[in-house]
Length: 125
Image (tube, rainbow, N blue to C red; front, side):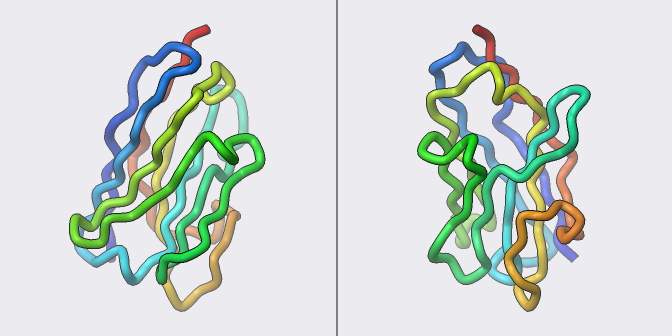
């Protein structure tokens, strides 16, 4: 099974940028749909972005569309989330998740069986 480790979080001012990384081990990410979720204090975990196992079309939550970009580097077995024009509302713990390729792409957190430990992103106003 795949293990996931996120990095790249931190404190940034509104309008700034961060790039999160999700390094996978144990299995190649080419066998998985990869996604990012986030959870703000006192709120439910929510979908942010997804990259299907075969590449191609990516999916985004409306709240981040046009500002965030998910990408994958199969050679490095790593998935990225480039976050631009950050807003205080983006403050959350960001999680990387994986779902086996033979299942459909999903935005539902319950459909993902593999998770990283999360990385904190804090956006100050």
